[in-house]
Amino acid sequence: QVQLVESGGGWVQAGGSLRLSCAASGSTASISVMGWYRQAPGKERELVATISRGGSANYADSVKGRFTISRDNAKNTVYLQMNSLKSEDTAVYYCKAIRPGYDSWGQGTQVTVSS
Image (cartoon, rainbow, N blue to C red; front, side):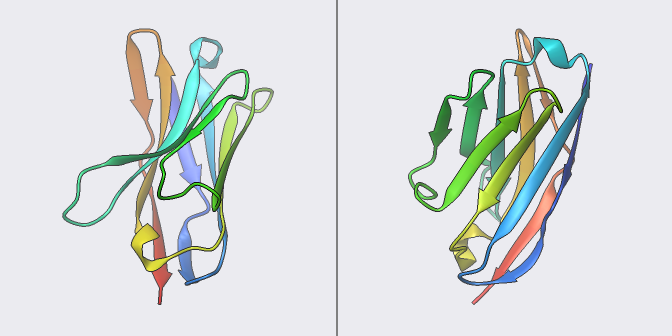
């Protein structure tokens, strides 16, 4: 079992920045990829960014150049630095941990960007 706890969400004006954190506990040694996804009202959950244990990152086109994902394997924590936020970034952001045959999700943290 892997438990994920997100933090760092909140309200920010357009153009501002937020940093999300996701701390994993439990069977963390088997986690390969960690990532961030988001779900806006009335929309499906979508990929924001993922990062491998070795640090290889992948981003959605909509956030490239604005968001940066990073990972501290010693702390079992993944971060999402979000800069130049736009109103369309408003969503619940979820952390995901991928293990062979099993994925785990956090409870989500709300990010609201006001224009």
